[in-house]
Image 1: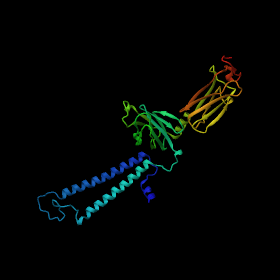
Image 2: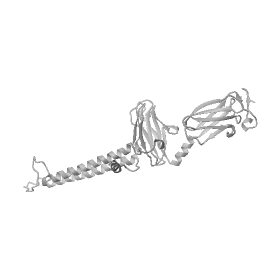
Image 3: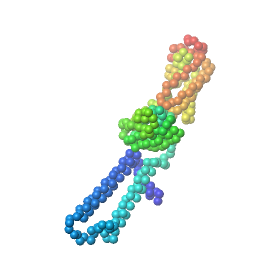
Image 4: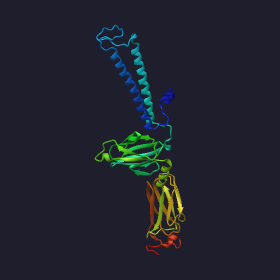
Length: 333
């Protein structure tokens, strides 16, 4: 029985816009039909039983104080009530099913397969963090024709995150998370984000944009955000090209990789195969005992250009081309 109910009431892969548009059109259509029928019937009876000043022997002519039955023992009256009840009950069931779909369109989909974005409202601005650790402010970039799950919260007071064109609205409350979703279909368009909770002096300025991109363009943009450039230099700010290795460890995933100095180009290592942002630990270790191990941390929320300075060792300009070795001490060669 539940399976049949679900099949009758659940739309197939519709967006929120489709669902609410369909509900609106159904209510508009039924309301129009009912309105036309009722008004037409009232006008018909008003004309039929108008006062002409003549005595009418019509047996169906209503009299003052008489309960109208529609004639024939009230069959018309009960028929009209029955049809109305069927329409109303069917409409309630169908609408309830549509709204259940809006609440949980793909409950069977594993959480790890969802495209999730955490949204935080704070200081009259919107902050977005993708599941891979990449962050942005005010502009939410999403691929077209893919379901986007939004988890909203607040860093200060109550806000309400909303995208009018996507029929999206979710409360942003400190310490709590509200979940919703949308699926944008028109690639290359930009839509407005608004706050629908009176949150302070600059409430009306708490806006943002949703940039809907072609899937390939979005993937290219995300790959650019996951680009890492690491430079190792001496105390005199000259790049080091030999005598060390660098270990990169992600605190958000199981990524751990060690790179030798020979993999650097003029003291710089560029990585384009990073899949997860977030916090990284970097350790530079000497392979010839010329300096002590150096460790640093950074957060990857976008493209990274990080420089690691090795104290206690300098490098000459010619060393950057691999023609001379590093020298110990505070002075340059």
